[in-house]
Image 1 (tube, rainbow, N blue to C red):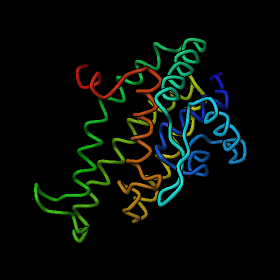
Image 2 (cartoon, one colour):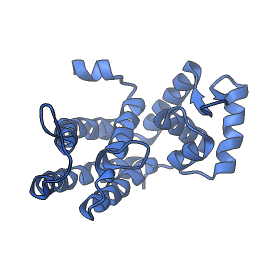
Image 3 (cartoon, rainbow, N blue to C red):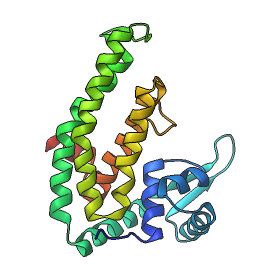
Length: 208
């Protein structure tokens, strides 16, 4: 049975994944009730782990101390669950798919080096979507293995499936559009989640 994560960890991670966002978005990312998340964020602010800013743009963000605390909790959870090795293997398998996924996103947005895709060529778009279907078939087992380790990974596979379904139904925004749970948005969150869990950064990943 996969291990459940405490709300404090989920909120710190959710805030890291969501970035500078209002409480409802953080709650949706963390998968927790909005009121519970609001109370936790208030406590984090008092402890110097998160900050709130209002004005033209309003929302919550992590402080450096909050990011460090989140990484500490993630490392402790991973070791307590005894699945660090499996998560590392999943991460390596994810990286094998990451380059092809980014290339697919570029192909969806562009039809040439300097030519934006106006989505007027149905055959071209269908070919890109077919490649996304193939990539998703390879990604879903990785998501399932992660979910078997830690319960908080359980949402990624279904969210990718949902986004793919919307794309296949002709809703092209669900391929790469930011600010919605598009395929690329969910993929990016999973990538950042793995980096946070394994205490890696982008520079370290590039070196690897």
